[in-house]
Image 1 (cartoon, rainbow, N blue to C red):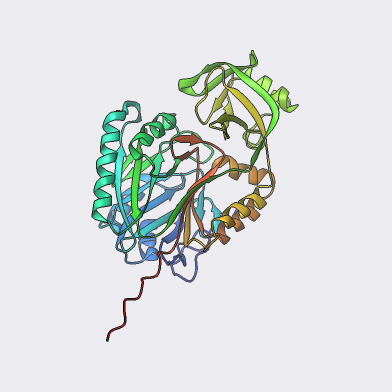
Image 2 (cartoon, rainbow, N blue to C red; image 1 turned 30 degrees about the horizontal axis):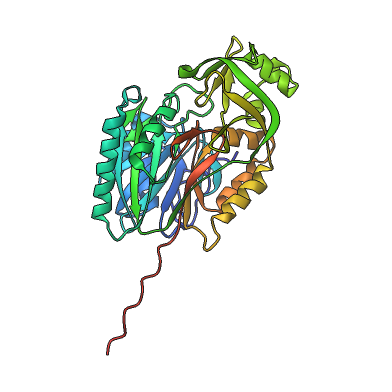
Length: 406
């Protein structure tokens, strides 16, 4: 892990891990600061620059005093719209980080946003939600007719277990509008995760940011996993709580361990990151990541699970080479000015276990990636795991020169 630097004033020319600093992005302003800095919001305000901003997004380490920080943010960014969430790790301009607050600001010169708060994930009204989305998207489009590019960004309580239901409902209202997002984290504690929305700190909630821009954008989702021929069937489960009790009619953790050739007592989060299970949906495999083993031997998952589901063990490719290759593809035809990404906590843990943390962090830095580590990712109509999903933002086209004066 990077050590925190001295808590001096932020300067654009110095942006070490732990001290605030302004990125060199021409279109998207970013900054990071230690989560324990007593004046964190003021440092971020100074480092991001004067704005004005259509949106400020903050990714907050669980080490921060969230109540105090929230009050500071409202004072420091009184004229700007602020949303955010707690994290399972941050991605700053220096790559992987921990114990930081990362801020991303979208200037009004190139972006327009409209944020929709979903305050209670246990009481989602799909029809009302669809109606709101259609009206808000239409209004945003009408207000910025010359801006032809758009995306939706979702932040959701990572312990709510409602991401699948929410993304399904949102998809009907968003239509072809591409969506990506991440589930708020709590480090490796899995105790409490929070969403920030305009001065409110909320659990069991989500916020959706509709974005219109004159910049070309590309929403993406990637993983480095290859399915094997080893399969298993979920024979007993509690879908609502994402619990699998039996696999192949045997206790779940014991059967999973047997298929790996391991003792059930050896199962850890690192094991789950290195040996994920996937399901085939729509011709493509998607990870159904295991969060932990319960004391009774049940397996608790990060995303939707049900009886009768066929799970396939997957094995990872080299994640450093894979990530560099996939992010390089985003630069074909011109490099993005910035990439805003949601990266699963299991990817970070795999990098730590395989001693590739530094190398992976360097790839993130080289490709101008900022964002946070999640408890799950959202991509269009799906809630997924062990992926990176995000948006690449490209410079707008140069203005066309008018005819020469006579």
